[in-house]
Image 1 (cartoon, one colour):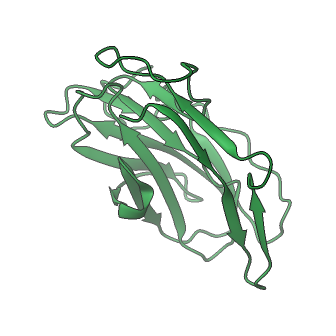
Image 2 (cartoon, rainbow, N blue to C red):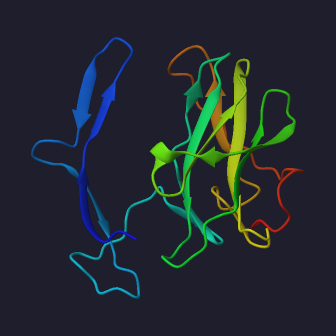
Length: 186
């Protein structure tokens, strides 16, 4: 529902207390929103850059982790919103995932109030070293329209479960899950 420019910066702090700020000073990060069809344009009208991905009735924004430490829970966050101001929010958002055992599992995501409008999160159980593959799936209340953050039920995100930093990200998986709703895009 936003329009115009939003300027922001990112602050990060590690466990040792070291902190960095990016986007402040002379060049803040800027996101420009274009007006909806029902509202007059205000300011520039360029489209917000990816990571937003339309998939059916929803737009997904997420940033999958590249590496997770073994034995630690895997926290996944996403924003799932309708593609227009008058669209319907999803009734159910879930993570379809495959861990080291190779079995498909479905974990419901819960509202994440710190994640902004349409923010959801899920905590997956700890895994041993290896790879984890996942997709974020959202459906409308009657579950007749569903979307998936990868754009296809055949494509999966991949994250390494590894104790060493710099471990390479596993290759993404290309397979259909037995637990995926059949109405998802192929």
